[in-house]
Amino acid sequence: YELSLANKLVKLGLILAVGLFGSVGFMVGFTLLVIFLGSIKTYGMPYFYPLMPFDYKEFIKVIFRPTIN
Image (cartoon, rainbow, N blue to C red; front, side, top):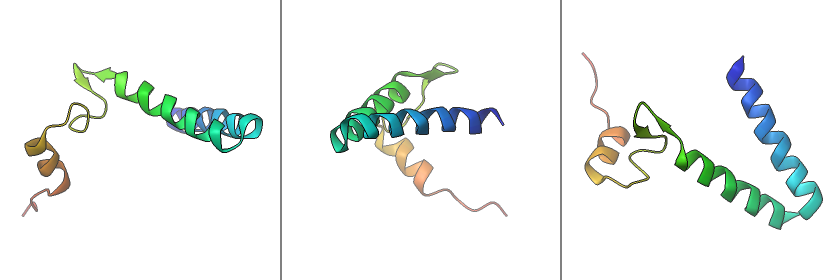
């Protein structure tokens, strides 16, 4: 429920930016959203880890997960 409310607020903000400024508003709004999410840390780890800062070995572990038998 709380995640859906947060998504609605983000969507509303992007709709307002696009309505006021067109495609430039979308690009600026989306860029600000990515910068905001990139600055958040949860439990001491960046929200976008391993993308920001990029760590190749951890990124490969996230993309190619082994099967659990």
